[in-house]
Length: 384
Ligand SMILES: Cc1ncc(COP(=O)(O)O)c(C=O)c1O
Image 1 (cartoon, rainbow, N blue to C red):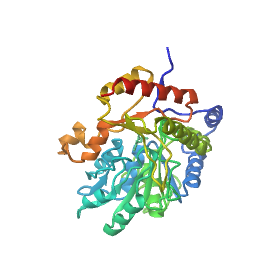
Image 2: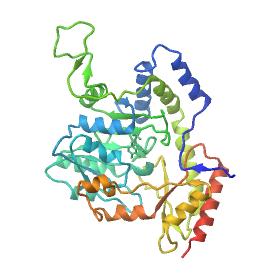
Image 3: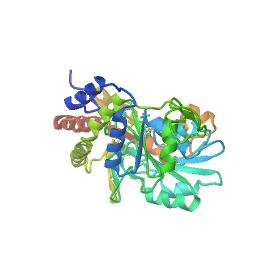
Image 4: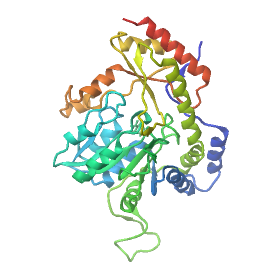
């Protein structure tokens, strides 16, 4: 049976495994020194002042929204073409999600669409750097300044990317940036996430929110003893373990290489697929350095028929392709909240045409060649 090539997967080496084993033999397997070490590595890599590592990327988004003060009656604008978490985090806080349409090529939120959707109730914007390509976050920052809004970048896809020379995660154009370390992302901690910020007030709040809203200093009740911890807000247990962070520290050493390999595979795909009649390939904007979490192609519907059949055939031929994403507001839960088909026509059209091809650092050149050959064979079969 021929090898199955998934659309993404982790790259774990012996040195990663040894780092984790070392922690398992230590006194601290959670909340020990590895958490701070991992946070420091994230700060060095992204140039952000502060990092708070948490249990997953969804928790990171939830805490960022809480730190931003999002609550009942507040509106938050985000992309419809993203993973559920970019939007659900607003609902967790009692806010209302407003979806702004995307660019038909990059699938990133369009700043003019964001501005069109601003009302007196808008409190924040959550731009998503789709597939690793940074969105026009400077323009979004300008809108944020104009209307006094908080910007939270969802950079789950974009660790290692740059926008106009600045690292994604540096928060140059935002108040906070969130990351995910799920195995399919650029580096992994199994499950894991982080919030980056340059604002001390947010940092201190995030630290408390990560662990039940409690603190071990700056008490209101000053007369208690050394045993005392104080809950000052309603937080969660969104902590990440030392075991996970040891893996994170080890993985961060390889981030540059991982991104380089992803970009090399994209180069090979781009060269092979250039000018093919069946689908458009992803573009990289002039001001962007994409870290290529995904390689989403867009089927040209006038040349081929039935994305569904093509998708099924690619899978049947050993390619673990995927579709990113079904527009969030079309999910039954969101429909129940009153969102309707037609809200973001570009996102709906993009969804109907896209397929993500395999892309991960461990892919061999022979895997890349197989993907190219299978793709061309399958697309040929479904030509109009
Ligand atoms: C854009 C985006 N945001 C947030 C998340 C949530 O991250 P996690 O799976 O670590 O909770 C994901 C996960 O895939 C994502 O793709």
